[in-house]
Length: 338
Image (tube, rainbow, N blue to C red; front, side, top):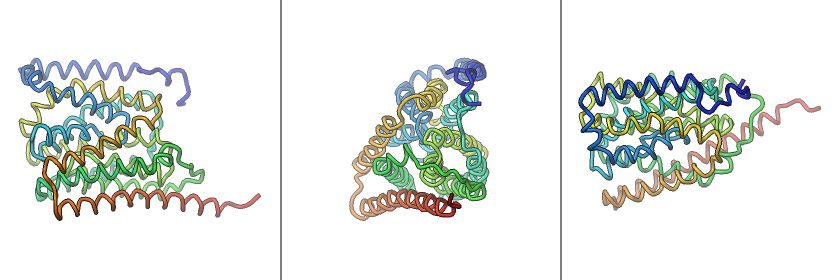
């Protein structure tokens, strides 16, 4: 199915129709709604999200990976604004990337993604309503900076395993469904609901290092999950608290960019070496941690706690990889000889 000439078209008809309808709606909303001046006035965010949307479509990290630190560190907005913007912009960009992925019938690990979506549908609203409002603004920034720096360092250390995982030819559907449900619930509750991103990164690591799917399949699967989580998070925020005007003013500028930028990232992920993009993103993850600590003047026990958490996150990813290696050895040992 994936290798047919129709499916090899870079821009399938379904996707082109989606883009036409989406831009017509965005044009009606921004121009017809009188928000064009606001959109043009926030052009720096549009430029930043050109990179963010590419990352959203081509890596296991959402556009909020760029949007959150730009809003918080560069523009001085609160972490809550950064989170809400991440949900809102990903609801457009990553939905567009998901339409592209589905219309090209790129491989998706549905056996894990569907349970992860169910888990996220439960965990994300609980986190948005009950957990996120109780979390201190500085802690949200630290959580984002430390989590992404840990992922960046882990990517460097485990790059070969991430790009060339040893496949499992005796999959365990029950285990896959359980781990997907756990990732979706835990990632939605404790990471995405607070920072607006992260559950996709967690799913990618688990898919590639533990379930042992190809990295390209891991990326497309993580995009699908982050799309769903962003829509759930945005809807929950809108219903429970409303969306601040600062979010929409930046959204008007960035939405037309990410609508096509994220699908182009998904296209790039399907045709170019993944190591280049993942390496660049890893560097950005570490740089934003250093920039955050410098901007917030983190020192003393908060810095020590951050470095300890960074080591724990990096070590956690290594443990997942070790767990995956043990699964392979155990399964190979259980095979009948001859």
